[in-house]
Length: 155
Image (cartoon, rainbow, N blue to C red):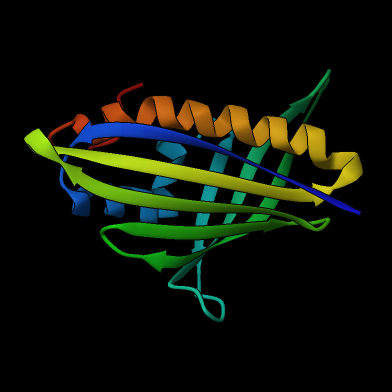
């Protein structure tokens, strides 16, 4: 049996809609924002996808550290909307629906809704990890987009 839940967040950044869509729609750039990602490889687009990726994350469960691999597809990529779906065994999906809107004074409003579906035994852990990771991404996103040259953050 599967469980499902949703969380959302909003970020504002001083950038163009095109720059925000370019960063959020290119999952190969997510390593600079997403705290769990250790590797992103672009692969040929799967059926119905604009772009497809294989992504490796590093996770922690108590004293155990492990890596996991999943597949992600960008289904919609426009200056005002991005939809991605990530799939991982067993039967776990994360759907990201991002809406972008220009606001006064050169700001862009980014509204993100994340829906996670996973088998009941994994759900609490998977949802918690997704929420923590995506909220950390949100905290980094505004600064990444506010940089005038959109270069990766220095480490």
